Length: 396
Ligand code: FAD
Image (tube, rainbow, N blue to C red):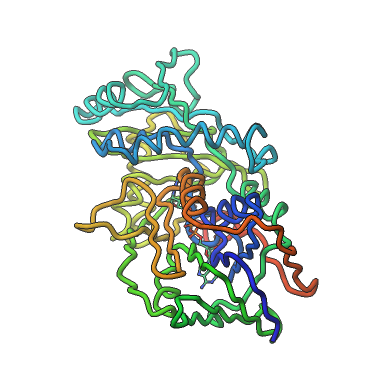
């Protein structure tokens, strides 16, 4: 059996694990990342890629010290996107430099947009009628522009894969065994994917960053699975001859619909629709949600022609650290138990903060240690397919 002595073993290659891998590698820490499917499978590839600056938290009144951290994060990302700070994310596609906010004719929607202008601390400006995106040409009231970048998640995951593939192993998910010794050190066993190579890792610290998979990994490590909460979503996708749109229809203290646009491999525009539609949609079948979304999108976007479009949905759970009262966390959550750290970023945008805090908490020896060299035949994880490429059934 091949054995590796290392400083930190990261399990799970979504945005949390990948940003941490980069941060630790930069700090000369001997680190490896284990992934059981493809990088970003789960929440990261399913996400809408918006670098939120606290808009949602401000609207719902959840303004505290963590939402202050959220407000600072977009700037941190921008520094990486333009190559000023590591990780170098210059290869990542920015799909839009901003999101729009608009309202419907309902009273609560009018009030919501007004409140947003007061409480939102992200730079925000009114858009003149001629500068409105085509999809919002017939929307009543003001249209606002919010400084929220939207990223192409596949290219984000690819940037980390290219930079760190020497430090990643694709493993059989079920094969992981985690044993904590009496002196609090931890041993992790795993089987390399597509083979029967068994590997034993002896890390000083293990970081579980496997999203929803953290529950099962914690159970394997003899830790409380209840440390995690799931909040389900049922997202909608629409593809066809649609105008490109990034933004939120605000209603009261909620976002009635959050829409981002992508281009699929056939060059068609695909809308990913979240917000209240995806929260309410949890109790609907796929067909019922599509019917509801058709009506709802006609109401919130009166100027858009949905003829010749195709519709599909996907279900995904948000995995978050449980906080007292089962409330929705406003910031990232991580905890250390012996030599095991479990981490949930809560939002993609918070991954840099999570990585920095975890790395700062570790006392790592700065002595130059020999770099880890993986056998060349070990398979490396690829990047997960976005939901619109993975989906096979579309409804006209
Ligand atoms: P994940 O992305 O779930 O990654 C976990 C990884 O661990 C996966 O690669 C998985 O294959 C791997 N794994 C699982 N089990 C094991 C195992 N046993 N062994 C090895 N590997 C394992 N946030 C924003 O900031 N902006 C947004 O616009 C936004 N939109 C969102 C939209 C949706 C629909 C959802 C669900 C979330 C959204 N979020 C957004 C939140 C954000 O996506 C998540 O907070 C973030 O992606 C979580 O990243 P993660 O690395 O913790 O987990």
